[in-house]
Length: 173
Image (tube, rainbow, N blue to C red; front, side):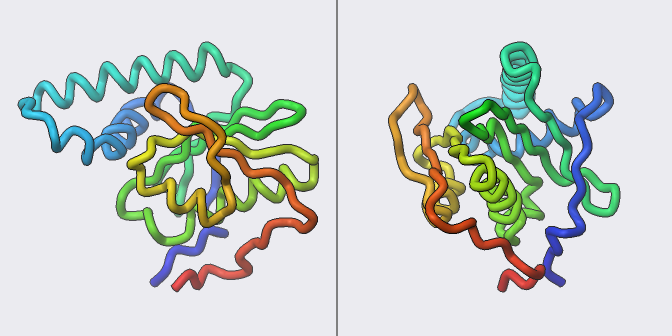
């Protein structure tokens, strides 16, 4: 049965969520770590260090952002971190457990942010690695490449003359 994105809820992250968030972060680095000849212990240590550094950076420099856990039937399935300013909605991070990827949930969440941005005459921006498969999703949603910042590409979506289309049901097949 396809995932119904309308059944997904959000709540602010809590300290007790950090083990799940670290695990989730690790799932986003699997492809990258497959290329290195490290032991499993070294990979686990690397993920822990990188997650802690990222979490510290986000919560220190973007303390006013929304750091939300994504839940389906009270089960944690992902995270969505969003920073808002008067002119921009910045998707800082969107990550789903692999079992929930490629089911339309990411595009649903991004389209919600795009609709909000349209209503408030804001742009939506994000950074993505050039090899990240999600880059294709962002291109399909009309995000445009702006510039390269280190290992990441900045992509932006600007409101056009009509509000972005929202899926009406959960049938994403």
